[in-house]
Length: 198
Image 1 (tube, rainbow, N blue to C red):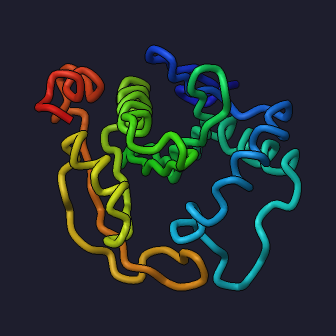
Image 2 (cartoon, rainbow, N blue to C red; image 1 turned 45 degrees about the vertical axis):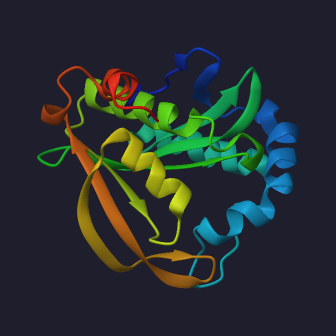
Image 3 (cartoon, rainbow, N blue to C red; image 1 turned 135 degrees about the vertical axis):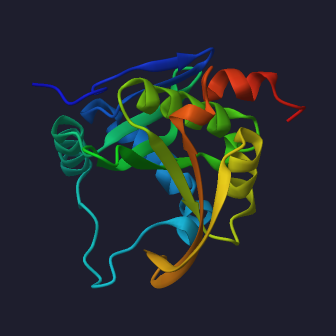
């Protein structure tokens, strides 16, 4: 039995969000290698020094398991048919909370073109349509590009979480932003498109 909302393919123009596949290995490795310096300051790390999943096949298996179990929705982000990043809905909690958080990364060569806000709006709408009530984004205060994403989308600031996540080898503070279903009667993507100039 599939988890609510997964698997899914979400589209807006030349942007597609879909499950990561084993066939993405070469493209994924190429994009990650080209963006290693760009991504390193924002990447989660294990405080015990345990390396991440070592093989791409292992990564896909783990993300697929999380998707099937209903704890995550791990999307590959494509632009013009090419793999350009990932958007992951994680920490999905059902029951009385019905909440999740969204994390993302994109090829630095495509940053600033509106792809990430569009992708976050698509997944937020998908989460709220499939039964979640609240979606949050947690961002390091130093990450100006990500702060601009939540500003464009009108995520509500909820405060500072001190030493919240282990990032690039240290426990780092994060600012939390959130939206709930009742704040978005017509959906986040529709609101983003009709908002003030970006």
